Image 1 (cartoon, rainbow, N blue to C red):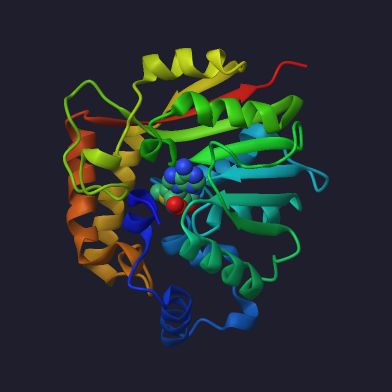
Image 2 (image 1 turned 180 degrees about the vertical axis):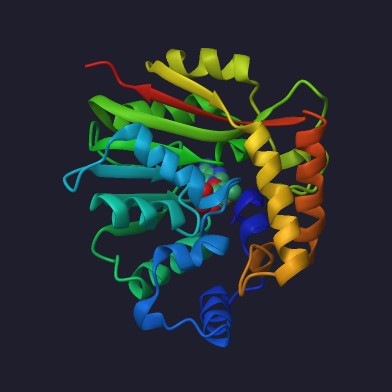
Length: 274
Ligand SMILES: C[S@@+](CC[C@H](N)C(=O)[O-])C[C@H]1O[C@@H](n2cnc3c(N)ncnc32)[C@H](O)[C@@H]1O
């Protein structure tokens, strides 16, 4: 296990912990929908809403083969598969997350259309031009060799296919305040600036179709989440299940990081030229 997957791996037993928490909250596994899991399995800023934007940006159909690079607990993959009928392969470095992702897909009846493998997003081992669409959501922050990541996405994508990157980028307001939900300190945190992204994506071969900065919405999302938790208490299961008690401090730091423009959230939609 390397330093990044050690950061994300909790004390173990995550599948059972999530199952018990859902049961205690009265959620019936037989009727569980991907949206019920969003507070834990859409592990990125703006959660399910951001995944819905990705769906809108790429126009998936039931025939689409999709690759999710750094698929985490599988929330984005399940949302895509449920709403469009597409088939999603997820690759993630953290073995425990792949185990959880596989279990949650079984619970939500999406095992046939979502598959998760332990692997490195910079070298997936998939054949060339194997997928119609690729995405990566809040993953590149942990990857120093970003060219390797985007070149791998380009290689596995068929000509004409779309690639979406939704990531946390370095803002102009100074160094990130740690801990954050992807790193305890700068040793596993490698944020590109928006200007660097505008060079990295074309350098890998992509045409950039659009770039949308959602940082204001991201700040609003954190503030709404905080207000909701103060009013109603936390949802049955949250990222604290694997990030531990530090999660409260991480979320507070994210508010500071956004207010002080130390981070930005940006979505790039790209295409591999035909
Ligand atoms: C913040 S989570 C995002 C998970 C998921 N994309 C989502 O939005 O719900 C970051 C994920 O990136 C994965 N990751 C980090 N570096 C990776 C790499 N080199 N290859 C594959 N996965 C990686 C971590 O294991 C973790 O699951």
